Image (tube, rainbow, N blue to C red):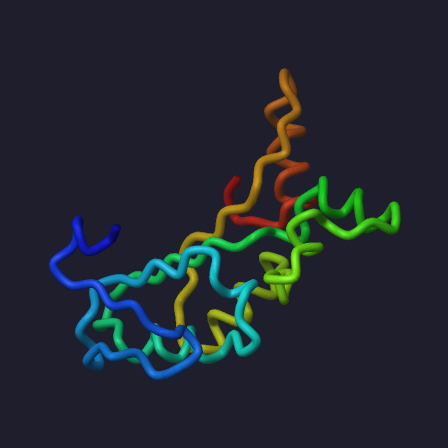
Length: 137
């Protein structure tokens, strides 16, 4: 599907070397892959290698620190997405930030799921920072 929208598109194993010249990409969208791979370092190293200086990496992944997931864990339940065999890892925003920084990325925006408390915008912002763990919600 991507080939119909982009000049170049590569399909590859994200845990192996990518067939893209070093420093040739303006951006990488690593959509929902880190929780599925055994070696999370490989795709981050590959992304770092192919991105130009100032290139953008977008890494969406489920938030283990989201309040609904915390509630499940406190009740002794596994989050639904982590029950599936294809999900190998769960990430908190703090751990993901550290992992990205370890691989040489500057994290300038980290967003987490919102905590919706209708009618209490201040409480919602406070709760979002504490219970979701993102810079912005």
